[in-house]
Image (cartoon, rainbow, N blue to C red; front, side, top):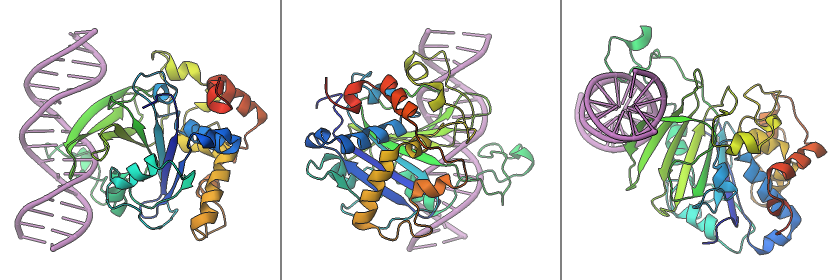
Length: 323
DNA sequence: CGAGTTTGACCAGCGC
DNA sequence: GCGCTGGTCAAACTCG
């Protein structure tokens, strides 16, 4: 495969435990000639920059070539027809979406890209601790959560990356705390936690069993701290602080969808998709998921400076044209 | 020696 | 109620 060439892009969003919003967009080579579609892709790509595979995305890693991202949050729904079979994020749907060379924009409601979501979304299975008072009494499995305590649903962002390595470098430091075999998949799922104190961000990494070259990474939560500066230069150095401001919502995007929301073209893309297939998906206030999500925060309108920054941080070939 | 990984065990939720 | 599964804990281990 040609690395550094982003042909297919896919993202999936759920904003809530039950509802799912999902859009997938495929940008083929021809589409790159179209500035708008190409920008859409780039925008989306940026949406995953924060967490995801910076090196991958920008070809800093030798094995990278394609990035598919998804965002999960709450209560946006798109129940469209599942094009493929599977139930898991790794199923055929993904492959279909990812490899479909013809469609410039396609949509699907399959669980592709976020199998965890699917089972997660069924219910909160987060609260584990059973014992109260810190769960000391019972040896393991207690997280110090109370029984009835419902853990707040953290926004999640999942993306798929074609990569040979499972754990993608994203600028943050992660500590692996578990690994589980995944049903219907020969590949285990690894669990990581951000090593920064008081940062509760977690991520799960697994490989698609349908396409072993695809790594599915799911981030959960928002970093409440800046990128570690000690990292091999990539993210912290590549991206302007404004795009990596920690959590404070008004400050700037610390989460990919926040970047997403700052990109005008992503609206464009979403609207395209919505117009095509899901008239009801934004029913509540005729806002798209990101707009709705954005309702509770300061709506930041991308400025010309943003684009300038983009050009600074992203090789121009990814923004406009090939060198 | 500290930080990170591995791995078996434990727990909760869900479906039957 | 039981079994399955996902998610997490934590002791043991590895690595720099």
